Amino acid sequence: MKKLQMVDLKSQYDKIKDTVNTSIQEVLDTNTYINGPQVHQFQKNLEKYLDVKHVIPCANGTDALQIAMMGLDLKPGDEVITADFTFAATVEVIALLQLTPVLVDVDLFNMNISIEAIKKAITPKTKAIVPVHLFGRAANMEAIMAIAKEYNLYVIEDNAQAIGANCKFSDGTKKKAGVIGHVGATSFFPSKNLGCYGDGGAIFTNDDALAHKIRGIVNHGMYERYHHDVVGVNSRLDSIQAAVLNAKLPLLDEYNAARQNAARKYTAAFVGHKNIIAPTICDICDCHVFHQYVLRIIDADRDALMQHLLDKGIPCAIYYPIPLHSQKAYLDVRYKEDHFPVTNRLVKEVIALPMHTELDDEQIKFITDSVLEFLDK
Image 1 (cartoon, rainbow, N blue to C red):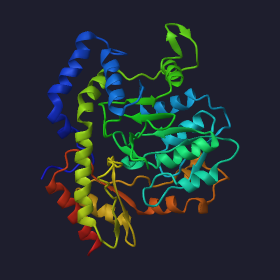
Image 2: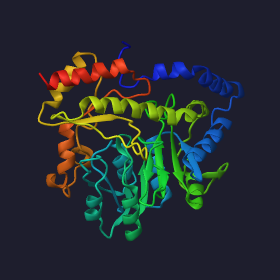
Image 3: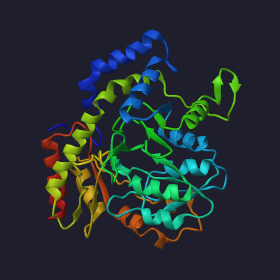
Image 4: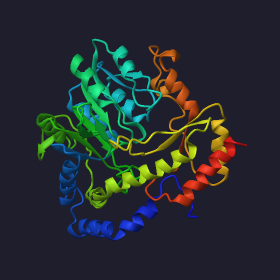
């Protein structure tokens, strides 16, 4: 059996190395390392894939979120609602811009932001909602957009973990996660479903004026060299990373399908077990692309299970061990523990198993047998 890894980028690269190497060599041959033709081509390719008018590449996913908010002209003190159960980057950028983070609980079934919690958190100061498509599962964007319309709020999608996922609406239509709100942001960190070989990110919008402003922000506020029309930052996707992404984008649906296939095999092994709540797979709308495969362990020792797996050479992780409302940087007297019953439960129950495009049946069986071995002893 191949050595188990949380993410097997080496095996993935081996299958596409000729295409990747050729793409990178083109950058080296032309010496166009910043804003070269590979960046512009990737932008166009991703716009077509997502069916969105504007993709603005940038340096990383955290920058993408920050720049998206900068483009909306949110003011210090404006309240921005987002999920308590997610990576810190989502709330980090809100705080950096001197906006007021409003953390709310998540849904126990899908671990995404709770629709009811959003409604309860809205005040006259609320200006935006940031849903996170957590672990690759699309949030309930139809309900979120309805709330935003009712209260005249912006929606900024954090799509760092779910590129390629579909959101299905009640009228039967589908849209890609990340392009439904007023603006979306993603990350191309190497372990993502669409990852480069360094840092990278992008912002998505169908709003022409917003896209124009964001294009200036990512490049020091310049539309013309040395003419700074808006306050900007230095956040550009370099050409080598764009070359890698151009090589991998045509394979994204194949990559996501491989993850979904691995998830089906995991879940089939765990179905009906009294100590395991496994994620569901929807074959109708592809709403979950399994950036992570996350189990909930109930009435059993999750931490001891994790050590058992590590002892057997099976990498695993806890995403996320500490809720944001308990993090020192984001403590606030507004937050009470009874505001976050689901988040406080999830941090004690979740465990992520290896998930990537190269998982094979032998590896999956070894992993699932090892989980069941511990829980059934």
